[in-house]
Image (cartoon, protein in one colour):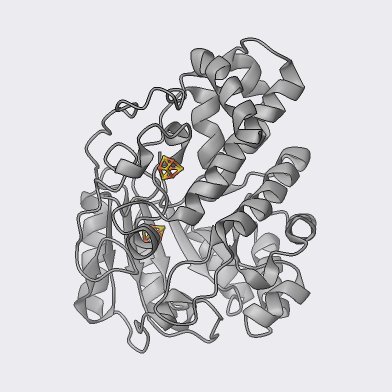
Length: 381
Ligand code: SF4
Ligand code: SF4
């Protein structure tokens, strides 16, 4: 029943905001995506970490143990300089602050936008001030308040919280990113709100746990969709920029088309320890994933969510969907579309709605800050 409503409203909204085609018209409704271009350079400066989190794909894929050497760090800087000006440089690990010399050397050499992904536990006052001086935007991992975070992340909540406090005191804008797993599904809205009120990040993220060859105990698509339903409602009620929600809502509000969900689908180079070069931290070597998008996947033909989807994480799609997308992704993306359409109806009633009116209502869910952490880092339109 809910899809029937969604479709009916999509027909109306489609006319006005050009989001895909109704599902009945299944003959190639998805326009060809533009050729990918380099939008992200990622430096995996170490495979080591001071924590050992439940679901960490770096640990479970066996990437650990080594650090990036100076020639590889120099290559990161060269690539960042050669890339288009709107590219983002991402410094990640393992935990990048375990190798502060390499991390800070790269961050000093490259121009913004530059984002540091960290568990936050090793941030001290000096590091926070240096990050501000270098105009670095950190994203700190936090899976909820302490009772949700600690069992998943080795009891590190207090140390991560101190890192966030030091960033705020130093005037550094930051994002907070959570992994949604079986252990923190319950009460996710309370955790989201608790973290939001306590730390006031510029943006938040809720990632589905990635596939790993062992230790993979993910929520089902339905469970993740219920969690994202809570996240959507909370973001809307409190005006919280939430990466995964913004990626779906922006095409609906602006009339644009989300062709690819991740820069790893042809727009990213990842350099790591031991001379490792790939398009995604999880994969080995440069794989061409540019066709893992709704325009090319048979499963997506006629899907009413194709305009907002981008195909999801290509790595998870390969592991869990074969030639098609990650089926968990499809469930929650369609749920968010339904919720949006229901909200449009509740807010505006039946009939066409102007893009301006949509823009006003949903502006709090869209990026409204120039900081890269108020956007989808590594997942551009
Ligand atoms: S990936 Fe799933 S939700 Fe996205 S367009 Fe394809 S079938 Fe639809
Ligand atoms: S494809 Fe993108 S979202 Fe998926 S694991 Fe790789 S970098 Fe992450």
